[in-house]
Length: 320
Image (cartoon, rainbow, N blue to C red; front, side, top):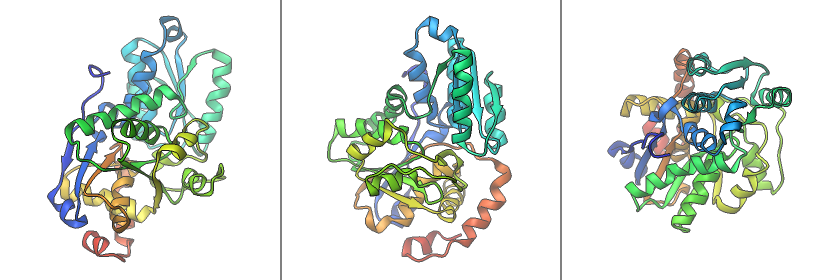
């Protein structure tokens, strides 16, 4: 893995530290190959496949970043990749996936519809299915990120992680607790797609009929069958943020740190600002999971950021 994926930077920001009264460490997976952490899991999974399996090709469904990760990993290993994506997937992600050599099929209004269509197609062509999150190999690959974080900064006591289907936080939580069981792992979902948040706090499995958020990378309608039990066992808490808070975090990072985050990638920082008083940490890791933002949506993001009604001292400072 080390020779395939980037060891992404772990950055600090004095401005952010002063705003929240904590030492904050940003794990910059928006600088990973393909612009998101998903390349880690995809690469690890494909490396586990035999030559005969790779010869059959691989297939998956994705909100965008997993698509690019699988497409690039498949190209590096000489396998054909077919990717199903929702019709509303940002054009930048669709084009990037095609540029990595994958066949792209656009279908459905959300990940769930694209996922179901990809399963039907897989039954017909026999390709190996590469699930975006509900796969132990995928989780293991994503968890390599936290090992890098803790090698760089072993004082980290809390890690904020965005959640869609739960593959990223599952890998991170298991790896982090293996190194230090006292590290707190806090998940973040959009309040417009809170399937795992609701499942975690209600001790049930919540499936949503619709999802709506600017963070399309975490707009998942139901928890993974494999990820949810891990999350309940290893994750310390899950919180939600709204689109205005996500948008404000995007604009903040762009203006203050000259760094572009997509909606899902901004969720953890949004949670740090929105829930700072409840996050008891001296050295807090924030996972910036991706940076593949559709630039055409920047005006909408700016408008949403401007709508944020500051209700806490932190939000008052960062309101834009």
